[in-house]
Amino acid sequence: VQLVESGGGSVQAGGSLRLSCEASGMIFSINRMGWYRQAPGKERELVADITSVGTTTYADSVKGRFTISRDYAKNTVSLQMNSLKPEDTAVYYCNAEVASGRWAADINYWGIGSLVTVSS
Image 1: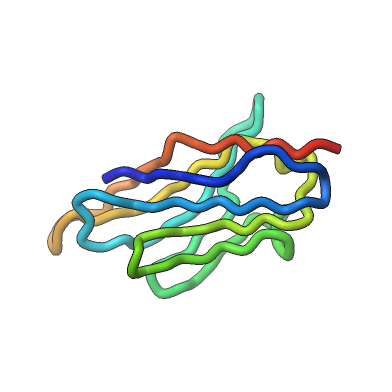
Image 2: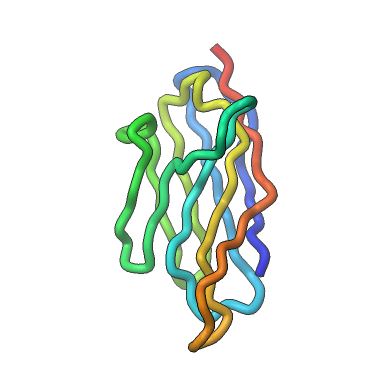
């Protein structure tokens, strides 16, 4: 299973960016998909995730500014980021819990990361 991210880049404070991630490979089902981020010198943290039934979770720091969405048919997850702040600068990682067969356990997969830089 591979997670391929797209989007990201550099933007000024107050601007918007959109991240997308597509899962491919031996996929029977995907439970949860989400985005994490890691800023320099900090631990990786959850930004937002969405379950197989559409339940979403957001970090307090991004509530009201970021929106996660998912295309279940295409195995993709997107993160619309509005009103970006310099403190949102980080490498953003796509994450997915994937079962490769009907009786297989979920395995956690990660993308390689996409850099988001917000300048003041």
